[in-house]
Image 1 (cartoon, rainbow, N blue to C red):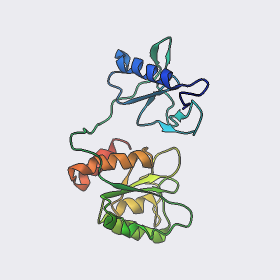
Image 2: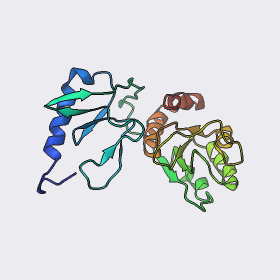
Image 3: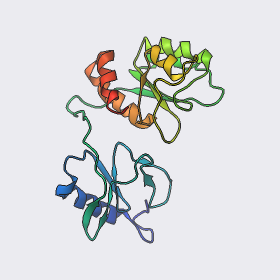
Image 4: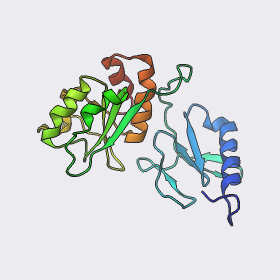
Length: 213
């Protein structure tokens, strides 16, 4: 977080701590890890939460898995390794990320397929909601390209079976939007982009995102 010419530059320490974790037996079968400021995070949960502090990365859902101390990793929690997608198929397909602000009417959504996007992620309000008038627009878009439903909130899962009014998560899922589970919009976008390299069926997309529900 601090440049190499700054007082207390943290880059070398971060690199060394990350290498120590990567080489450790204790880190095996935990999936991808992120090590910064001596904290060890699971990549699926970590996010940048500050622009400047050395402690800029946090995992709001579960906290760090452990720390690097005395030149060795100390794990206090473990997570099962999740599914992974290889790199042989090339880079992710282009996926649009749309955050839903107050007063948004969705007028740009019909243009996304024509702009070359292979899919879209919608960061909806609350637990996965949009205004009622926008629901048919999202349904029409989901009939053309895969659309994943995420939340613009910093923390928490997208609901799947609580609210049933027009524009709610039940309504949007019925219109073929795929809930992202606990993945925020940025990570859901990456996962959808990697998934779309395979030209998957709708069932396959649901199957991949089901691991994060």
